[in-house]
Amino acid sequence: MRGVNKFFGDFQALKDIDLDIRRREVVALIGASGSGKSTLCRCLNRLETVTDGEITIDGQPLPEEGKALTALRSDVGMVFQSFNLFPHLKAIDNVTLGPRRVRGASKAEAEAQARELLERVGLSDKADSLPAALSGGQQQRVAIARALAMKPKAMLFDEPTSALDPEVINEVLDVMGELAEQGMTMLVVTHEMGFARQVCDRVAYMDQGEIVEQGDPEQFFTDPASDRAKAFLSKILPH
Image 1 (cartoon, rainbow, N blue to C red):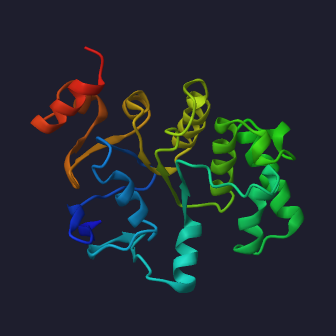
Image 2 (cartoon, rainbow, N blue to C red):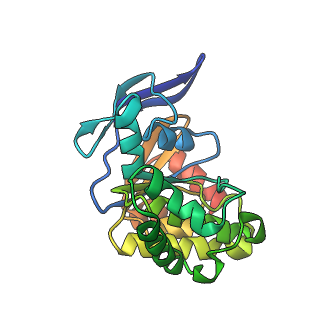
Image 3 (cartoon, rainbow, N blue to C red):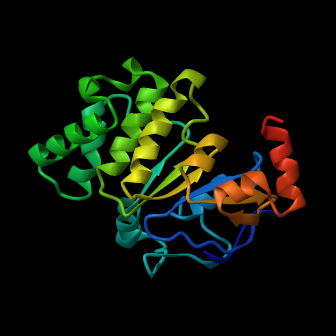
């Protein structure tokens, strides 16, 4: 992202954002609610259109619409706060839908891959369950499997655990940690500071639409450079 600005009417949600995410890097985007994190994440696959500035993914400018945008969205997976599973489809059918419709995979090929992915997220026994029969943590893990089924180059996570009960948050974070270990390029908007500190390669702290500070997680959490980051951490970290 280079010089990215985003306005909603008169309100400026993103202010001159410059951000690079390298291949295989895991970047945590943290900050108070309303600081612009989710907007930034959504701009990266054009769920929101930037007002001005430049976004390139794998060397290519972010497409505006049409087939090029569809192709980009299959290369950049996204996992949302609310799981957005199709409620009338079984878990396995949620996972196979994209590869069959967008990638042109055969039913057998898509199902074999979906079963592998459901096993990878610890849900091989839930393939034939409807979303309503699954816990929130299980639904979010199906959503991750669905995004992975498109074989993306990178993954965007927009507060993937914020809608979950505390006891199931770790099931989702564990899956994300495994993805990070396997080399998936990831941008994670999160309030889970332990995950940001232990799993991520870099932390970017946002406040009022700006990236105020970014760097090594251990350095950021022990000795942040900016007063704004110090004030934020003093509110959320145990003393």
